[in-house]
Length: 640
Image (cartoon, rainbow, N blue to C red; front, side, top):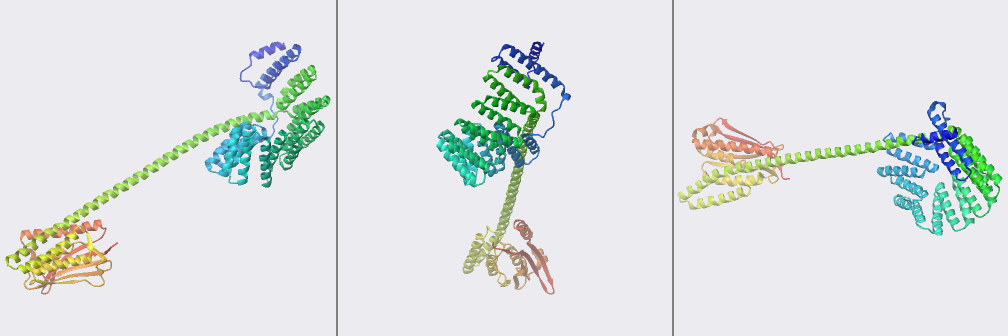
């Protein structure tokens, strides 16, 4: 029946079962090669029965529940990391990665610890936390050294040395890199000794203990056992970790055993066992019982060795530690095999298999392990989500930058276009101003040439020559300033004087003129529109004073009122109304064009220079007095 069950379950074995029974079936096959076929058949049947029990147990979820115990430190660290990943606090995530890595190191799972330290380092690099990057890089190097990834460990020790700001820590990292580079135990010892001094001075007990251990291990390689034991003891003195102290004591015991000082090795191992019992550390007790049994076997005290292995097995079963129970059973069976006690070996396997179901039920570490796997899967999912989230954020940020950049460029382009258009408009207005200024000159030139012609016709060579000299001087002055919209008031007054002198030379019997410029006006500093006043003087002479019976007066006044220069042109000619009656159609058209020209110029000047020039023309109608008054208000513009 047992064989039938075995064959049935072998055929029906699902590929996804990963149960302890599977493992022990392999052990059963292994045993078949070393003991009799009769015992092998029994063990195979037991293994098949165990598979059947596992299947039944799997279907009966409600038939048992593992005793609820506190989660392991690894599980807690994983839970904390899971919570941290759900937040946006990257520094907290990095810290939890470090914590989980340290717990995995204590558990001996160096490969996973390396992965989590790498992730922590990546976050600190992103946050530009150079101090944390240096510390995590050193931890990463230490984990890689424990896995014998020497090349990577050297690179990370050197990288940590570059990133740290602490000169002592820089030296320590370079020492560790040098220690791994060399195969010479003496050089390794010297470098580790230097680190021990550095860390002990800085009060870093764990690092100092590790350095002393490295010194001792180098001395063991040199067969310098006395000094090696001394440095192991120094490591124990500074170590803050009870488990590390136990490990160091076992190394000393190992040195004693290697030197055939088994009594010392046993005594020290017994002390470690007593400390483990005192601290209630079941796993350490089991491991220590295994070590102690090995020493008793070397000492040929097989009875005591047997008793210690039995104690280790019973303790593992009682504490519900499946892994340690399996190890203890294997060691006990192997011990019986060396003693040719094959029946005892078989009985050990049988006892273990019989107790396996109850051990598993009590083993909360299996539950913790499974929960940790679930949590780890969730951590991976959260990490993937975080990566996707970061990618989306980066894309969003890039898009935002692109959008902002586009808006800025568009704004700059619009500003450039607006400025260009404004510059073009101003340029066009300035061209129009020049055109309007030049439009006034031909009439003046024509009149002047007529005057010269008149002097020549009268055979008055002297006056003609004098007039031409004054005229050429005026024209040279006008031409020099023809390209300027604004000229100093002193230049404008000089041009107006020359013009009035020429007109007075022709019509001396018709008018006298006066220019009134108060001293308070700084004619050199104040700017005024070029040739804006001259057309009104010309109108006063040609359309007012010339037709007046008798001699008239022309007064050009400049007044300063606040931030404005007021220009007043007053003549006592025939006045506007009488002048219109006497003018020909051509003269009327020219005068109208002259006034509109002036108004256009004022409008353009106001737009180009953002000013408020105004013009007012009024007829004087007082008792026995006629004439015209022109008032021009020009805001003060000074030289910049």
